[in-house]
Length: 389
Ligand SMILES: Cc1cc2nc3c(=O)[nH]c(=O)nc-3n(C[C@H](O)[C@H](O)[C@H](O)COP(=O)(O)OP(=O)(O)OC[C@H]3O[C@@H](n4cnc5c(N)ncnc54)[C@H](O)[C@@H]3O)c2cc1C
Image (cartoon, rainbow, N blue to C red):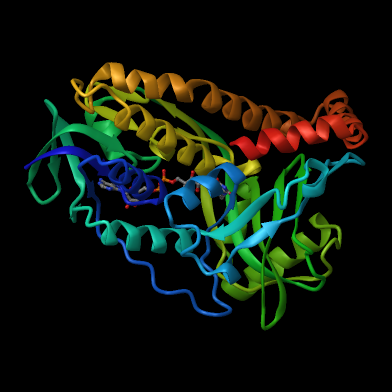
């Protein structure tokens, strides 16, 4: 089978790449197991939620998928409250930068469902198989098919079978932290505020979600040392909920009143990863190309930035070049070098700053936060910078 472009992977990055390329007139197919996401039910929320930046929101709106999501499942973030591990605190408000909101909290399942529908509506061919090997410009699939294409896009996640089979360079450093995610009932309303605590034993974030029939709801993302997370994950459900609620009562400082577990607890090992993004006939995007600490909630936003740049390079190429021409792919690589490095340095730097137990650093990080809190110009700059990602 020969194609012009084949996207491996049907996560949010893979599906939006296929859709964006098709909308620019490229002949594209998806290679991935068929994904389906059942329709959302009242009071039930997908376990993974993302903070979607204004830039990602604009991109998804441009693809026509943003408006297809039920408005009642999208939560605008009006403010962010960031606490240090002493008296440091930074408050960012949308109105400080004259923005209607800082970000949106959206369930992974909602974005995936509308993307799957759009890919189907567009008639984009979907090869229901998996990439199992790669040699001489050809993918071998799990079912034994051989697929040739001018360009393969590896959007097949952090373990990227295509990246591994094609031998693209890749490095991964474990953080020895686990990202724990769960939805919670909150005693007090969140008022559209995302609250985050940078502690020397991890980073806790409570993200606003729509209210349920039980009242206010938030999504917890707690990056915790892996031993502490493993102890929690090993507990039986009732003991686990009681232990987590006990830890939250202390760590969340009563900010949203009593917090009660309302869904299953999931744990994700956290790593810092980067890969060679291109090779002749291959481009990586999303988690296949880079993975960050989730403390800034920017992994998917960075992946959607990859998609925009890749589509621009490929669809905007000279008519005499093939989609997988290395000169075309180098344009993509150059466009992404600075944003990917900047986000890597920012998230890894913040992680190191708060993981350090040395007293001068503990003083410095809290003093730094107090200083930012009283500098409106810097706050505006921080908000404007975050909205571009
Ligand atoms: C705890 C936590 C919280 C996070 N919070 C945020 C946040 O708030 N905001 C944000 O922007 N990011 C966040 N992230 C990051 C975000 O989850 C990822 O960056 C994003 O999901 C990556 O999407 P992707 O499409 O690249 O990969 P994936 O979602 O992993 O998709 C990979 C796809 O490839 C397919 N696949 C796998 N193997 C094969 C194969 N052999 N052949 C074909 N297909 C294959 C899979 O089926 C899947 O469909 C968070 C991450 C963690 C761990």
